[in-house]
Image (spheres, rainbow, N blue to C red):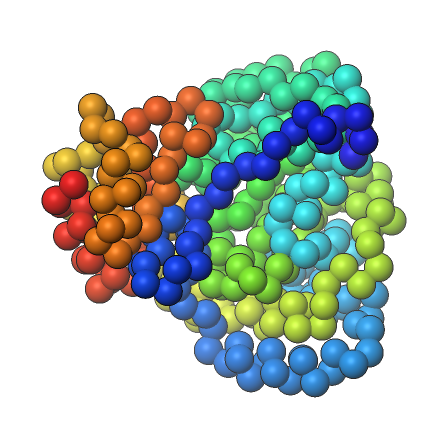
Length: 336
């Protein structure tokens, strides 16, 4: 991080509500967690009187099997955003240029600026057509947040090859890829994959994730990693959750079915974007997005004001939750 850049960089707005009286559709979190998580957490808490093993062998093995890479290519991090920050810190210097998609996750812009570098914004659906030369890094979000669309896997791998030929690392944020059947880019040469365990497993407060990288970048991520980067409960519950194949399959099917149903229902009032993720982006047209967010909140439902994303001025975003909860959202949005 460049100390001279910190004062000129602000915070980034995010979804989520801690109001127990609101049904939260503003954050894209699975409302269910794998069976047995509580027991695993309590057992791990009893072991927290000593430091965890700093090499995290069980967590690395679970992550490697989860995304299809070698365990020594996994770097544990306290959440996906920590993997993103570490990657940017190790590849980007003050004065560099970084290709950043928009509309997309606002933390990419922030982290690049904290390095004293310049983000060059590219429409998210055009970033795979860009020339990566003369850039320190390219960032891709797959599926993209907030639009929800995933990149074609073959096209993404071809672009990774172009980045490799240009000597430009590619950072692929796969925070929502676990909701799809698409294979991870983990293990691809000169590609850094950032993964979060927050969304799919419904554990945002656990702060567990990891980066995957090969070669020099992978070595540097491991060397720069803080000691004991994950607490024992986070590492143990994370490893357990990544092995819950039945839970993952059931979640994917539920989200796929509910997302399709919600998009059909909402399509009569809004332009609902096609999505591969556990959320839908809605263009509300001439209506005031902030007013829609306020009205929904008054009726007990929190939705995301998506005008905080670069390039969007008439949009809201809603998560895909459980069927009964989704029915409540549809009823509220039918009246706004």
